[in-house]
Image (cartoon, rainbow, N blue to C red; front, side):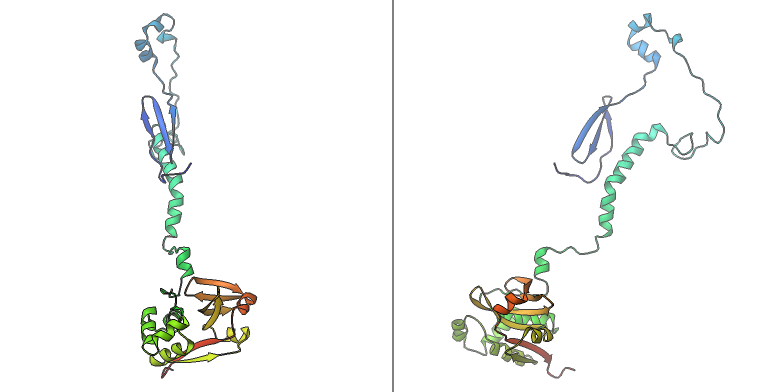
Length: 266
C-alpha cells in the first residue's frame, strides 16, 4: 500500500453515513443522530400503542452562572470547550493540520538544493566525451575548477592537436604529458612534470594530474587529496571516488604533472 495523497480530505456526510478519507484509505461509518420522539411516532404510528409522548421525561435546563454561558469562541457556552455543532469541521481541520505538518517541515528546508548521486559524483569534474581524450579532460578540469580559467575539453583537445601529429596521438591512444605542457604554456600557465614521487610528495602537490593503469589501459586522473588511508581521485571517465593507498600505488608509476600559476600573475 502506498500513499497517493498528502492532504487530508474533508469529512463527507450522506445517507446518514460519513466517509473519512485519509490518504488512499476510505472508511464508512454510520452516524448516530438523535431523533425527536414526536417525529419518531409520526413516522411509525404503530409505536403509539406502547409509547406515549407524555411518558418521555423532559429535562428542564438548570440555571447556570453567567461565566459558564460566556462565549469563548466557536459559539460554545462552556469555557475551554468547543461546540458540538462545529465538531466535524474542527475535526477535519485538525486532521488536515496533522497530515500537512510534515509538508510544512519539508518546505522549511526547501531552500537547500537537492543533488542526485550522479551530480555529486561528477562535481567539479569535466567528464571526457571520447575514449582517448582523458588528458584533455583532466587538464580542462584543473584549469576550470582550480585555476579559475574556464575551458572545455573540446577546446583543449583541438588546441593540442594543432601542436602535435594527430597520427601519433592515435597511435599512442591519447595525448602525452608533453602535449599538456605545450598547451599550458600556450595559454600562459607554468607547468612541471615529476618522476619517482612518493605518496608524501603527491600529497604536497595536490591537485595534480597523474597517469594510472586502469583495466589494462593508460589513463589520466586528478588527485585532489591524500589522507591517512585513501587517495581522493577525480576521474574524467567515471567521477569522484576514493581508493586505498596500496591499490593506488600498485597502479601508479610515481609520475605527476602539476599546473602552476599563470605567467605574470602574482
